[in-house]
Length: 115
Length: 113
Image (cartoon, rainbow over all chains, first blue to last red; front, side, top):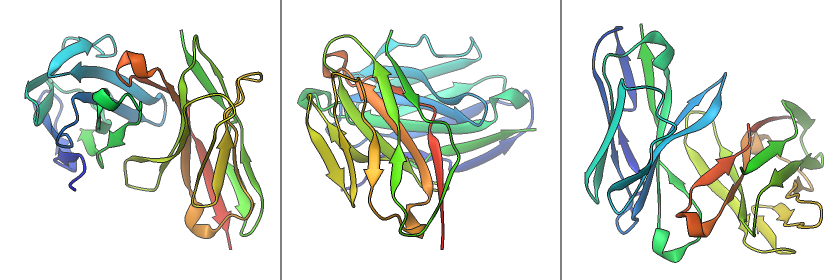
């Protein structure tokens, strides 16, 4: 079975540009999570969805960040405008909420560099 | 709120040495506990888990026991290999909260030949 698929794997952009990161969760998983990982702050939960509905976005750093999940198989995380301090690895993870295991399945991440 | 505290790293060991990475937690109720491993350039992947007190999770020679009395979930391996070099994360989750997890800061392990 395919795991969580993220794209792009690497993105280099200039300050002020819009960045869109994409995620396809594992089929049948109905919880989706966006995390950001940096050396300074470690792993931070940005937002999560249950059944395509945003449940908790308290980790979204500011209004420049937005996330959507238009259907069960696709989610986006958008940064507009991007800033150098947004440089990080962004992970998407999914979970089979119905089974209540609590286990997360992570994608390989999108490494963002904002110059 | 919930929190997870891991022993500070980095940890450097010689091949075949014994490994312990300490993890303690603060949480209400009865969370599930996890160890995730992250190899360079990859995402986190589940290493082992335990869902109730006194459960022992094990995988690939790694073990951890859910100790409710000491609120701990220490990771151990009897003989590490160079291929075990990675970052290890302790985490907890309340299944009733749809799998929202709380992670520790991660411990970097380097195993030298």
